[in-house]
Length: 381
Ligand SMILES: [Zn+2]
Ligand SMILES: [Zn+2]
Image (tube, rainbow, N blue to C red; front, top):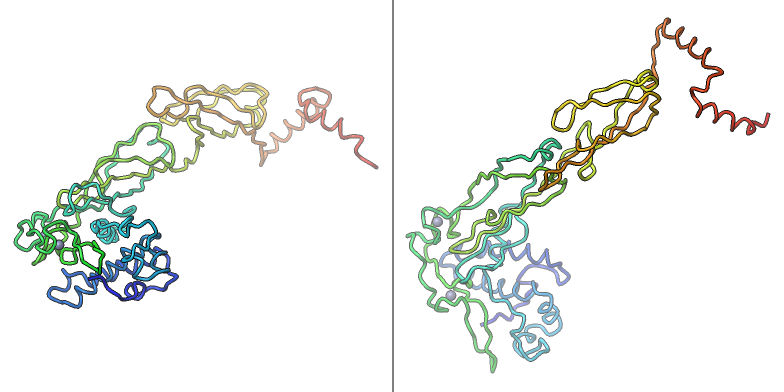
């Protein structure tokens, strides 16, 4: 029989509580009053049943609104407005349980889904793993070995969660369906079975190793192949490598979030690479060759043309990043910065003074010459 107690009081939350607050409080209370943790305690069993009933309503926005307006009558008098008081009800309790379990691992994303084909089975949650690689690794592709928190079937009970390691007997209260129906006046109310909490099987003596969960925590080592040319902030989905399903439930998926570290030398934009190279004043003026490393460590010889200016850019084709799933490579853009010499020796100064003297009437620096010609008439005095 359904409780007449206030659902908010049962879940120990305010009427204004957010969905998250309700969920958190429910998880805490469900853990506290779980029959497996309170064997033989009738009060705990009743309480467990009540908080589940309350949560079933308050977690659903539509049902919560109806409850706020009509109280418990919302669910026995067809108060949902469409003549069917059961519409929108969710009797699958296993989903909620996978959520509780997933709290153990903070990296789990979301709760369990339900793709298993029976109420007894529980699907594993998805798992997130963050990995950071260097730009060189993103260029060539890399294989990484990662360790992820996982679960494996409990060996003691072979995943059944029972003390004797045998499959738990079918729950006699619901005949294994996980659902029970109670008559309330003319209405028949269907809810999950409080004895087996919707699992359809009744674990009387819980396995001590896994406390009846059927699985134990386990660290899993996986080799992840990161393809050449991968972009920063890429999410890779690796099916079935998430949390293990329980008792025939499907495994969750593993999501590897790849970020690429900043490089001290190269900047990346898609498949192209950019690099700033300082060159000496004489190299810029007279021309020359410089050598820089490519992203894969090879030497690249770059011709600096005579008369190169600061911020001039040179494109070196096919020396950029690898293009994902392609044989192609992007380009490398080299931007020159002309370095003005400092800390000159006496001899250097003399030579430059001489250079200045003989350059006076030459047109070797037309830009600055032109500039000062143009601003002449801006001087007031
Ligand atoms: Zn076990
Ligand atoms: Zn049952």
